[in-house]
Amino acid sequence: MNSISEKEDLKREIGVRSLTLAILNMTVGTGIFVIPAIVAENLGAAAIVAYLFCGALIFLIALCFAEVGSKVTTSGGTYAYIESAFGPFAGFLANNLFWMGSCVVSDAAIANALADTLKYFIPILNNPAARTVFFFLLFGILAINNVRSVKSGVRFIELAAFGKLLPLVLLVLAGIAFVSPEHLKWTTAPTVGNIGTASLLLIYAFLGMETPVSNSGEMKNPSRTVPLGIFYGISAVLVLYISIQLVTQGILGDALFAHKDSPLGAVAGIIFGKVGITLVIIATAVSMFGGLGGSILGNPRVLYAGARDGILPKALAKVHPRFFTPYIAVITYASLGFLLAALGAFKQLAIITSASTLLIYLGVVLSVMKLRKTTAPAYEKTFRIPGGVTIPLLAIAAIVWLLSNLAKEELTGITIFIFVLAMIYLAKKKMKKN
Image 1 (tube, one colour):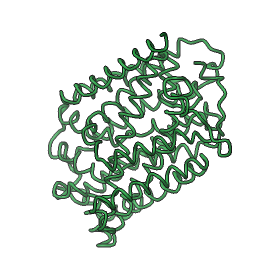
Image 2 (spheres, rainbow, N blue to C red):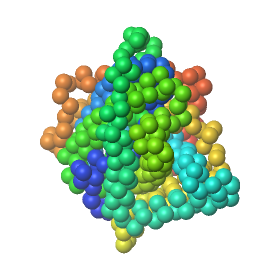
Image 3 (cartoon, one colour):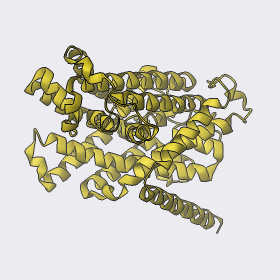
């Protein structure tokens, strides 16, 4: 596939600001509202070490995304990157592993978490029938918004990003006055084992940049927008996360372990009283809603790209004649999310989601090294990571190390999933020959 020159009938509406906010929106998810207590359980006041390690790893991966994203500018994001570097078989695995293993299942889980959060305000969501109606309206509204135009989807993402970030920033700024320096003192030195365990949990709070780059075919000047958007977005995420951890640890101290379900809610209660608890609940709901909106904006483009390249049904590549959006892909993706959310079948697949994302990241990093061997003229003026292969090799080593910490069941599940996909690809190829 000639990813550089291939023409698409999509509007380029996304700039650096929009991509930065989209990365913030997708990365700052529900995890940050509970993760401070989980990380501190392993490391105590030294939890900041895990944040620095995960931040460094994500920056390594982000640099790889920036380089390959400046070269491959068609829709599909991670799938398009891997397919351009390694061909149709790798593209088929990446496409399906991404949208099935990493996206739809995750969205169904987020939708259920959103319903559980909103029960505080809407008790009827305890009723299964009411929850099903809620899921239908939730995915339906987001699908319609993204079908009408990519600009509408982008505007929603920007509003959602501000809606979730403002309460968190306010909590950090107001909480500084309540921090006790004694609570931030290290009582024991962190070990490699503790850092590894905590980082394996924490890394998932940093995942998310792979979804916004799926809209690369709708970005203004992708060779500039992708590197800058990723750099600004990940930098803001790291600063925000470290600030939240320090304030939460500094205010609660050892009491942090007694508030594993909602450490930020406990902090908000100390700072603002009952109003603060309500504020955190609203911010959590906005975070989930914004994450779903960003997912339904970006992930259908992976289906669209797969259909465009012939590995998925061609109907998914149809572009709306009026709105210039891949409307069949959007509707299909949202429908699958609704179905899984309503049935709850995602629980059996939840283990696959985390490992799938790390494997996708590994594929993107390897794509950087492969595409560097390509001497296409279009690559000459694109972004290139300094330091030769040092950064990609460090990223590969860190990802493999994290994957080695997965449980046996997780490794078995993802292996079986990839094997099934490979069999489907070979069967489809044989059918085409016949």
